[in-house]
Every structure is written in structure tokens, then in C-alpha cells.
Length: 326
Image: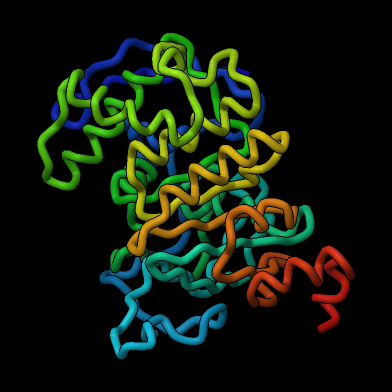
């Protein structure tokens, strides 16, 4: 299946861009780092009435949205989710049934669960995927109501998502794609845009981080890439954009041992005390190379248990039945 998107962004957000076709091998078709100016109805549907101002609350996944670092200094949450409910837009089938989660700066969170538990749906709802409607709850990102933002606004605000099956963009090479997305984010932050030579100097060192050669920059986005190359390219986008919260949806799927090591090394290399990672995975092997601060178990559209890395060991030894029965 292919989508025709007319990129007619008017200055100053992005320069005009010739039409191109997105070829997808999955139903996911939104490369979030590229802020395309589509209409609201085609990008995000919500039956949830937005809150007039940012919300601060205490959620069950973590005891308090404001905690201390042991020195008496308060920690302000990066992401706060309370009572989030959502349905499939077309069928109105409820998938999320009250998700509560708090992510602070500098933390790594992993969400695990059986197939169909709502993990990937949760990540797509956070980035504003149009296949889902939010029917209740609140989501606050960096102190602002995330549900009021369009998908590209969420990206520019510092939210990044790596999809399970990244799309191909024929006719658009990597360096042009990344250059546009990076300058759009700089403009959002009130910073001057980088010219071609300045941007090349900025991106070149990041290629080593993901073990990619310079010729990848001249190839069309994900076109003809292997599974491992696509995942590395996603992490390169993350490295370039410098997102505050990276959502990695099964970043380990389809990767061999070497590719997984490269991706994990890159993700670990991007972590700072101010940004955070939210990983979705089925396998303990990812958690052994990217150490989570918290592991959350999702079941039937809710997070039913939160703990440390020992939860993954329990799952591996006893399965999800042990968690559900606890």
C-alpha cells in the first residue's frame, strides 16, 4: 500500500518539497521526525476534551510526580499520564483502559506484556497516531498538555518514536530529511538554522555512534535498507534531533546480536540526566544491554505492575501468569 503526500509546507516551517510516495511494509505510516503540515482531521482524532492548562497529579505507576534525588532537590516529571483511555478510531474498540505512568528526566522505562495488551497502542497514542481516538485521561509532557498538540508539534516539542517497521521515502535522501527535521526543531527552540556545511559537521560524528558509513547519508530514507540498517537509521534520527523523550517500539525486533549491540550502544550513548527513554519489548535480552530504571507490565490496556529489572527475570522464569496472579 502506498500513500501520496503533497509536501507543501510554506515558510518558515519547512521549504516546499516535491511530492513523494511512502512505501510501507506495515500499517504504521507516520515518520514522526518529519513535521508535515497536514490537516488536523487527518492527523489526530480525539473525543477527549482538552484541559485548559497543564495538569499536575499523582499517578499509580510511580508514587509521586515530584520526588527528590536524595539531596533534597525536587525532580519534575518529563511525562505524566493519568487514566488514559483510547479506542480504535474505525471500530471504537477500547484498547487503553486507564493507563497511569510517570517518567522523570534521566530515566529509562520498559513496558512489557503479552501481545494485544496495549503496549504499541499506548506508544502510538502518545505521538498522536490517527488510527486511535483518546476518550479520557490526561497526558502532560514537559508541563504542557500533550493531547492538545498535533503530531508534528509533539515531535518539535521533543517527543520521538522509533517504529517497529520504519517507512521508506523514495526520492528523499537521509541528509536532506534530517537537515529539514533538525532545522525545524531548532526553529521551535528559537535557535538559528544550520546551513548544509554546518549540518554536515554536526551529523558526521554521530555516524560512528550508530556504526553507519557516510554513504548512508546519500541513500534514500530506508529504501533498500536491511532491518538492522533501518533500526540504526532510526537511532541516527534520534541522535540528530536530540529528543527529550524517545519511545522505542520493539527496537530489538529482527536484529541479530551484532545489530542489537550497536543499537543499544547508541541509545546508551545518547542518554543524559535530562532526557529519557520509554522502551517497548518482549525480550529480556534488550534489558540486559539497555538497563531500565523501571519495568512496567501491561495487561488488558492497563499497567498492572511496576518494578525494577528483577521483574524481567520473573517473566522469563515463570511467565506473565505469575505477574497476573500476584
